[in-house]
Image (cartoon, rainbow, N blue to C red; front, side, top):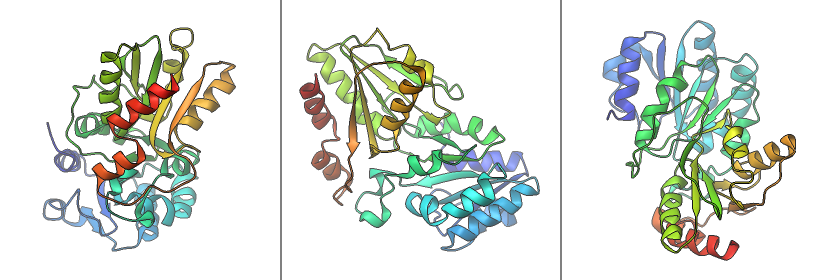
Length: 298
């Protein structure tokens, strides 16, 4: 399996429209400057400038793939993304590094736990959250091929599940369950999968759906649960407001559907800065914590 950098390198070498850009964050693309030459652009710590320049390049037929830390890519450069990229619906592809709890030991300034809410509010903007490195490289060719702008929560952690091939805009149904169905996305898929297995061992019938794409959203995957499962548990490393729980609520109300939905995520508070395993344990977002919380709910 190719890495993110290898996939981007090969894509750019095969298609001269691709330009790789970064706001002085080269963690994912450190080997590309010598390969791409003047099609690699580092604007420095200037996310706004990067997005404005990317819009200009896109207007001239290029496909810019831009890189920055999630908190700064979504918030510091929001007006440029909304106005220069969104209104014109330009194919600027945003690769968001360390989203959600993946900001690890950094403090609240580096925590992007409202990014899904922010980016899905831009008309035309597509929003994706791969579960792991395998999911990421499987999804990206399709994402980069769309004519729309996109925001991707980059996740390069090793896969612990052999995913089904990606179908654009479709959720991945891992398991079906009568008692409840867990719906999740991105990094939280790992702990959700382990929790689903432990709950099954404990005698519960538990389904699991990986929402790789949050916009477009696979509403039919939710519609298929009505009458087939007793309740839905949404799990996300994001504020409950504006994230998957909000997306579910919006869909159910719009379609006139009814099913109990219980959210697990951040409810109007930042997560305590620490190393990733400690963050997950403290917030009850590791598999053990999820099993305990879900068991209480059911």
